[in-house]
Length: 104
Image (tube, rainbow, N blue to C red):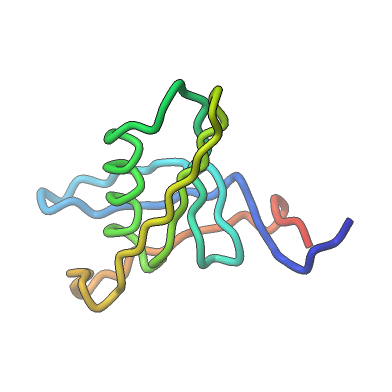
């Protein structure tokens, strides 16, 4: 079935840390380059999930993210961190998507 959205699960972000370290992390899913989806399976939502997603939102130009928890009682949480609140500086971190992992 085609939904008309592109998505990928092989998205790597490079985050520049103040100490000039380079951290590479793999995001669970990115839809249309606009929404980060963090997929979890846990007994309950947890502050660590929210902190992880907020760090991703602050470090990239993506403004919207969702945590989807598929535990015993499925829940979701939507989070927003707008680009005007970010201190991206001269270097603009971005999501690099491997085109071979795209659907659509």
